[in-house]
Amino acid sequence: MKQRHKTFTFILFALLLLLVISGASDANKASASVDIQGSLEQALVLAGGESTNPREYDPATTHGSGNKLIYSGLVAFDPYLNLTPDLAETWDISSDGRIYTFHLRENAKFHDGRAVTSQDIIYSWERALSPALRSDTALTYLGEIVGAREMALGQVDHLSGVEALDEHTLQVTIDAAKPYFLLKLTYPTSFVVDKANVESGEEWYRAPNGTGPFTLTEWRRFEQITYKANSEFYLGKPSIPYVIVQLYSGVGIRLYEAGDIDMTGVSYYSAERFLDPTEPLHDELLTGVNLCTGYVVFDTTKPPFDDAKVRQAFSMAFDRQKYINVVLRGRSLPAIGIFPPGLPGFNIGLRGITYDPEGARQLLADSKYGSADNLPPIIYTDAGIGSYIGADVAAIVQMWQQVLGVEITVENLEPNFYIDQIYAGQHGQIFGGGWCADYPDPENFADVLFHSGSAQNNGGYSNPELDALLEFARVEQDVTTRIEMYQQAEQIIVNEAPVLFTTHSLSYQLVKPYVKGYVFTPIDMPIERYMWLEGK
Image 1: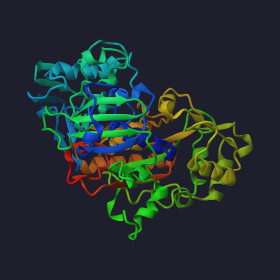
Image 2: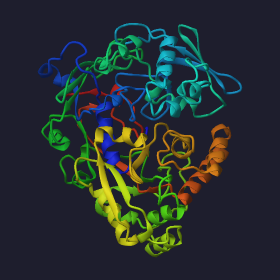
Image 3: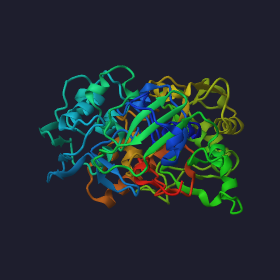
Image 4: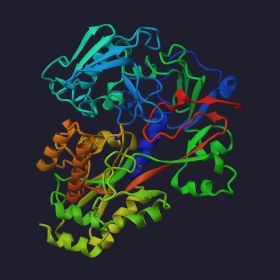
């Protein structure tokens, strides 16, 4: 996520979840407890938090990148974003591009030793699409499969486009030839879960029987999560014996300096210190550009943002560079459109809505509301605790108040359930948003976020011209023509201003010298599987 693939408050919240769920995840006590004192020198030790929302631990309902240590799917990305075989050893594609035949590895097993079969894939996908589960992501990532929409609507009980030819051969039929279909299967919604495990009780996810490179051996709530290398992993046992996540144990940088953890993210506020060549830890800092775009969503179904001129005025009243310099210490790239640098389709010539106070006031005057005085009460919904307003939200609201003379009320939703509330439509006319790539394709941004029929289109934006263009781009086979279509789509989105684009985020990570094989990946993947410890 998809998604996600967030304004900066939202991005930071999502990254916290990502750190817990990706670098180390969830499950109460699965099997034997690990002797921590005796295993620390064999462990990659991280720090993290813990969500209280059980939906974030289920691959079918998570809004983040899922737990790729525990679970896996048919295909995956390697550290360099090459699509690689995972549970599927090979696959064939029919000449018309609609039928995929996956050949599962015969040595693929669940953590309890049971062999993975084609029926396990079918069960997992049908479960994700079942109306009872209410997954916000199922149609986004499985919707191309024939019968998926009918199943999600409760019209049928089984997924007609999927057939088990035998225990290790799965045939999947999609609605049209779409060049990005395989990429979607790297997202957790398509990951395999064990039916008996899922049906064992409400907190099944605390003792998960996955298929991934690590098994969860212990989960002490609010204290620690321990993973052990899966010796039967079908792609080979990981070199790191243990991954230990210390929960709520302190500030990451302080723990790193004390030698208590081996890797940690660095905030924008601390980055300047470690970027200084005279800093002793300077050589342990790694930097990179995420495939992320931060933005603020305008609910186009609610006044006053049902008027494009009002949306454009709010976008034009935002001083992007000042925001980056003051709030983010200059540690982000300005975003004027949806595609981040590095993503196919990024357009250096994109015409964005730039800061223009006079132009913003004129647009508001030209809108059907005529002036700030005629606007209805406006609520900005954010993820937060109590009445505290984050610096990012405060800065944006202050700019709108100073330039446009509008009054805006900020309301906070409990962070662990913020995303659920957004998808349920329980938010004001403005709310924090943003997106990080799930796979390196412009469809994952333009179509997933702004097509009228997309479940991720939380602002309710609808444009028939854009929808038609995106639908043509879905099936266009010529790469150059397809990219041009997405760039045209991006320009329409920018002009219509359904969101205010803010930044493309940068990443800063401290990594101990004895941690080998670490590669900065702009898309979340189980990098731990490729790493090893040397001389810890």
